[in-house]
Image (cartoon, rainbow, N blue to C red):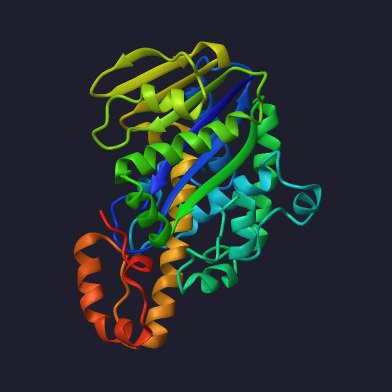
Length: 325
């Protein structure tokens, strides 16, 4: 068997809200034509659920601002219900997290009190699902649980790492830049998931991190590898091999087309959107009429100016609210 790991992020560009990095891990008989095999499987599950869309696809295709979280939520929660790491009790209850706290636990999100923003209790208490019914999700998860084994595919785990502004800014203060934080977190998460099947070859698929083309040193550091072979570094793709660990790591433009990356993209986006819903609910409760924000730079500045009075009254330290570039 081969372990396939896909990674992606949400919230890399915004100044408000968290940066979320996610990954999904899958086991298949081999990596040959794995992308096509997984794509057919995702389409089959989508068709079984009465949809023309595959269950797992690039989050940018499944979600547009104002269109609702239904498509992303179905894919993420059905996946969580179907992972090999779901406990027997979770599987017996349908495996669907009931609130933000349960979602955090299932995704392995660390929630240190010292860096959590003021709105975070709202996220933890948020009732889930938010856009679909639990009953439909259980039925969908049952389809996933039937179709995956028939294709000799196992969904091993889905996991997240989340950086609130305070934690993100603290990393900047250590000398890292924004790109360093993303690459470091992505590879650390991939290495953690790779440890779930240490005796099997593994392939890690990452979406390209901005304009960065060379990752060999980062791959070696985060996989504790004394030797990393560079296979290719072009404008479209960078690939590396760790012979001692039987690991290949690829960074590809348009990587979300591959199902493991797509599910990671959807998971990161889902968590980020729920986090921003909690953020906006907190501040609009304190300041009725304050227009919500998605946190991207131009609108984040508009929001900060509009919220200046309530921010001053709340005495929020700037580094706990605003992610520096």
